[in-house]
Amino acid sequence: MASYDPSNVFAKILRGELPCHKVYEDDRAFAFLDIMPRCPGHTLVIPKAAARNIYDIAPDDLAHVHKVAQMIAKVATAVFKADGVTIQQFNEPAGGQVVFHLHVHVLPRRDGVPLKPPATFKEEASVLSNQALTLGAALKG
Image (cartoon, rainbow, N blue to C red; front, top):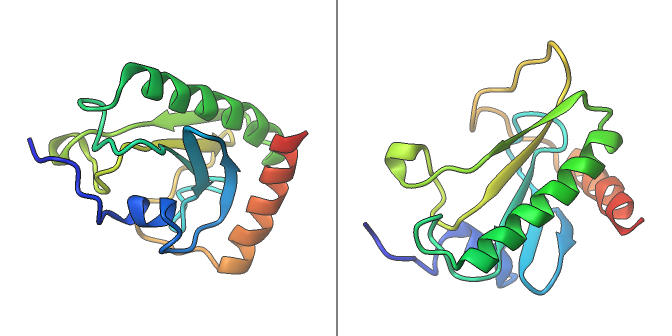
């Protein structure tokens, strides 16, 4: 299995080398909107620790990422008037992982509305900015 590559896109986002639409940050996790969302509010939660995937992340860091994902799921369900939520986490190419920094997808879902196919639709920056501001404000209470 390959090792962690610090030049991956999420590591660059964490270092501030690439922009993102941030919705949450604490000392161990960072969350931002996917620029190619499969649904409105599609959020990615990542550890600040350098972890390629579930195989090499410290258990406490993994637990914290999922705690943040749960918090975002609850708030995003209300903000995006969702009927439920899909949580996804992929590991290695055979498991569907594309970016090799551990990340959890939080997808607010509405009954009868299918997800867009992966990586097929790039959302307008203004839409993502508005969603990030709304979700971020709701997370702060």
